[in-house]
Length: 110
Length: 115
Image 1 (cartoon, chains in turn red, brown):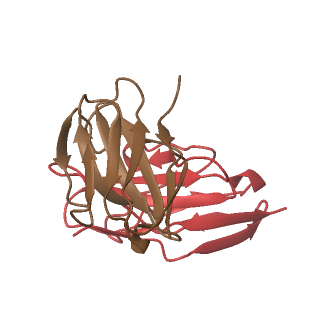
Image 2: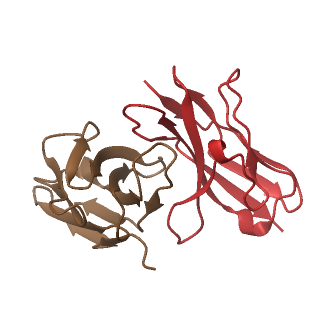
Image 3: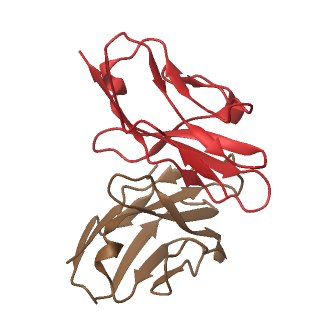
């Protein structure tokens, strides 16, 4: 069975501070991993996915298969980064039921 | 262009009532997903369509839940004899193709409250 764990329910930082939102996964095969973001009063949207190896809005995430982690990082947080962040996993090949973590609420104080 | 839309946005039902939730995906999107999101939790997969075919319904919590997408476009999630534990936000998402790397586009959700 696949599982996604986001250990922090809430992460509070000041503007300009580095941010790391943790995500650990459990899956025996080769996963596809994603970060989704939901800003206040907006719908859930894709932030980035590991296969693209891209940086979106200054955020990056590296898949660490040894530690089964896909932490989301940003060197300098901005107030507009305040949102709910969800880590998600899809199994590559065959059935790919997406599994989401419970989410981490990021609050960036001025 | 228009994104994924869902209706109604809010639904209050008395326990035992039947409800129907509608999802209009982005035009041309092949895949359609339904999720249930309880308060304080992430979305949980319910069911998945590829065009009109329901390829996976393993996430439906009971036989009171039924989903259809008869013409491969609009989808309806029906819940019969609603229970209080059905209270949640129901999210619909669509993607252009099938595949684990396809971007899913989410609707605003329907918040269902069962009294």
